[in-house]
Amino acid sequence: MNDIMNPQPTDLIISGKQVHVWTGGSGPALLLLHSAWGDAEMSWAPVWNELSRSFTVIAPDMPGFGASEPLDEPTLAVNARVLKDLLLARKADRAVVVGNSFGAAVAIQFASLYPERTRHLVLVNGGYVPSLPGFIKKFINMPAMEKRFRSLVRNMAYSDKALAKAFPDPSKLPPALFDSIHQNEEKHSRVVFDAFMKQTKPQAPPSVPATIIWGTGDRLTTMKQAGTLRKWLGNADFVAINGAGHMPQIEQPGEFVEAVKRAGEL
Image (tube, rainbow, N blue to C red; front, side):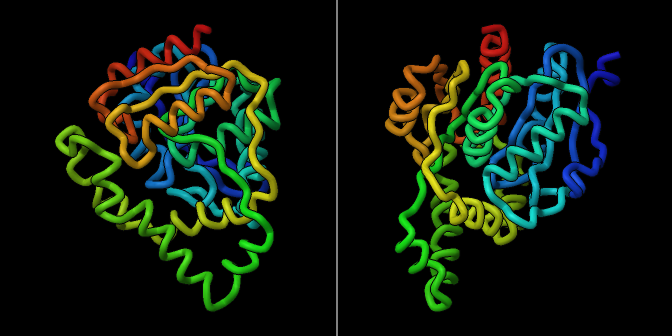
């Protein structure tokens, strides 16, 4: 019976694009949005079987990641619209929306555009995206500069130095995690760069209940940033996972599952 409840993969056509999504379990819908380092399976496989005991898990490869097709217009808003259509296709009117890292920015956009479809917002070691002034975007988009900035962004998020900051204890990670991240770093960093460059205005705090779950050992997105995010959300509930870094669902899966279950009950 447990195996039947565990999330299984399928491909759907959503908004005219193929979306690879894992679904399973029973209970309130739980939309899991992964980081920019990989797909849904890499980010959520350590916890989705256990979460499926309390929720109907819906964990897509977001557009441009894993086996999902990229968007023609890769903005946070279009990502959010695809996710709204995905929920409808899965017959879920509302969901607890959990976003890790880049997925947190997408989760914020979803909750801002579709508060009526967001039961609770959960942000995991990630937050909102500011918008760049137009003159800076024009400078970055100059042919001589764009390649350099793409390389800079990729180095800031995908280099060995960045990963060392993100994870205080690599022994808690799957052995092949770093290889998987590096294998797809050019493709994934391109999706994130394009989404951020197309953000036309700063994200605003959504008007929905929110919880922040944060690995305290993360030096890539620090506890100081977590505090700023909490104030931005109006002193949202805060759960610290000690000893974990940027992906506490992988590093401390038991504590993470309990934190999500508590958020889903609020």
